[in-house]
Image (cartoon, rainbow, N blue to C red; front, side, top):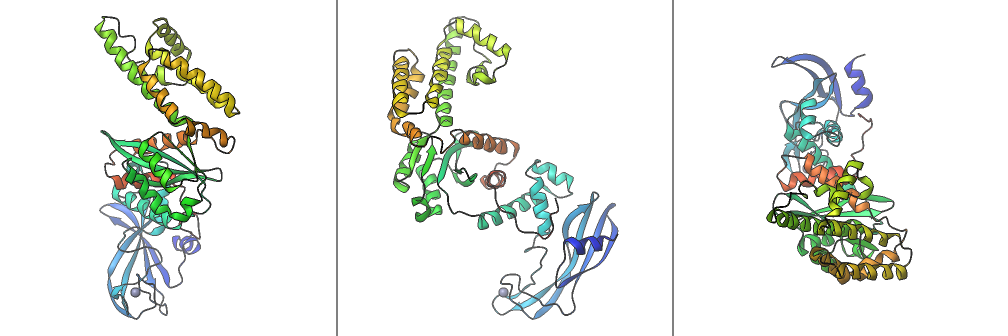
Length: 417
Ligand SMILES: [Zn+2]
């Protein structure tokens, strides 16, 4: 079967013809060249406004990279005509297989971007005979399309999270949609300031802001302030994930202080390399780790006591009614306040200060799962980590939308993957 036959089957145009297909040597590497010509009676269109225009002249032949066949790069070759548009003047004609000055066909861009969801961008470039910046260009163009055509109706639940994307205090604000029918990353903003979140609400628009029912975030003052102002009708919730994050920070700080104290007292460095031991959920711990934890317990360390009080707090989420949860919370608070755990007391105080937001959980029982934010946070961290070498905000922004945005793809007549 001829390559031309396959192309006509899955990637056919009205005004252009696949003329012939040849195997050539390009710097001693084989390449497949597919020559395209315009149909004799075909109409010409402006590439900017897509209006039918008279022809002007013809440029030298150019190559457009297509999906490789059996590991051999495939290029379309076509001499682009210029048209004389009454609005845009002399410009290149509209091509159904590629946009602007891009060296990649649209189909190849979608193909590369789909692989870039599963492999690192470097690996994709290597596998498909392109440069890293071609993969970047492909993903960027698919993300831009997706952002333009995604559906923003019927959004009721949001999650707001901050994430560190570079060493030092360099943060991003991420806004997720957390509805049961659709969960995805909606918006990325630089920093974690009042302005960061205001940018989202401005983009989202007054009507959509007013339709929000639940917003879930952590106890970060700038966020809480903006939510009160822009979506006062929504129930603002502190979710389990963000509260656990606070506990873990407190335990980690306590552990650091104790290491210093133990070293100072000439005790063996019991707590070194125990960070994960302390922060991990009990259910995920191996037996050897539990044995080590038991040894730590004997020393009656503050970090271990904090850990036990953190785990005791988990019971909060199992209550069905606000009344009993409140009783439990007050008892837990009194245990913490009677302890000598300075860091944990700080967390308790923060929780007490935001008690109303904490107890909003009982207004939503069963309507909302408490741990979705955590899943997203882990995926976002993984994307940032996998995207090593991405220093620019724009690159990270595109990688995150690509992985977590659940964006619609341009429609194709044939699925190439
Ligand atoms: Zn035009």
